[in-house]
Image (cartoon, rainbow, N blue to C red; front, side, top):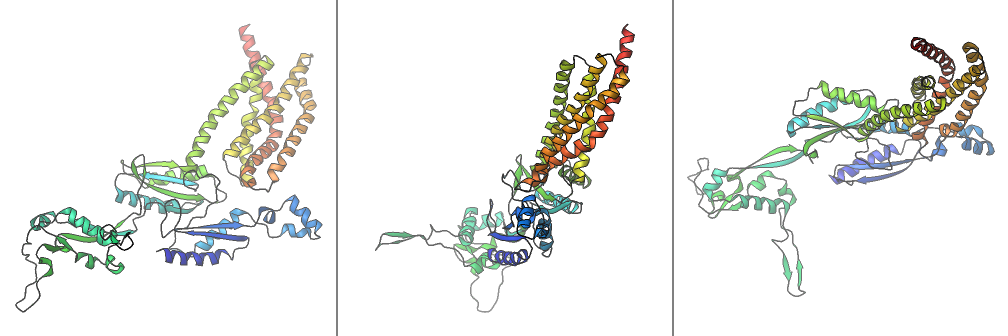
Length: 496
């Protein structure tokens, strides 16, 4: 009920207020897009980011205050507090809890993983989705796992004995109308008009709360009949003076003579995807794990439980957006290579030298990914943009090397001497370019403002990838230049 949920939330609030860094709590009970009495949202506001993350501005303020060590105390990240909240909520195993970051744009469910199972049969769908939920819950790096389809709403199923109802002359609509008024109520059936003030009052007519929740009380309701009830073999008879059986009153019959009520468990709601019944397994990603890798792990878990042929799975939400973004980025990388080759071929008036320059780009990608791993970041939209930035910087250094080596060879130097002198002459400009690029990325890398945690991945990939690949690029470009020049000379000799 709403009252019990409110009492539970108040206990959780007292637990959350004990967490260091929590400044304010805002709770909504029984609200949301599809409100339910057994659901609640708790919004937690932490200290301002300038007060809990070490930064240059905080260090300067602490130094001016005469206590520079204060800038190094009490530092924590939002991810750490989210993990602490999860540990606090683990004390309540009967609650289904999820800790999420509050996003600015609501597109679908606000979770990292949204994996849907589609099937025709609701009971089988609930069974397979529950098995998948338990399997996903055991996977490392996945937290806050829950399933949207739950058969936990109790209700009564009314089964009408149509032959018995027909013999008694009971219309099915009479049964439905009786149950509707008794349980749901009807203000039109008891509308009262005050003749003195000429006002109309809607008086709701229904059973009291105790009887509405009693199957026995509802079974003893009466419905109108069009014929006299036939004697029943199960009717109680007695030779003593006893009142007439109420179930056989003229023109009326008791409800349990024509219907049977039994308890069933149904879902509070039935979600559909492409006009098919759907159960969604939703979860978040723990720090240190990548979204794409965990989505693939969930997909493998769904294959292991062996879904029937009539069932299907879909990846929705952020996982689908990540897959679509990476798929489009692959085409972006291919097109960028093609256009860079065409421009370089026109600039150098040669078809081989652009290949020497572009060879350095694939070498930078592994170093960029290693930088993400060292920095604790994941591959996302920002880091994918960082790969494009990294391509531009690495390509520029290769252009400096190849162009200067060609100029020296045009002056009459042999290939080996041109390679050695060209790399020596261009080492300083390349280092200056790299240092300037890293210095320009430092504000993005060390920034602590709102949203800096999301944007930091592009700086980590670009700075780390450029720094780590610098030495290999300086060594690889001369080697590839010499190798491709030998291959070109071989083709020229064959043509001659």
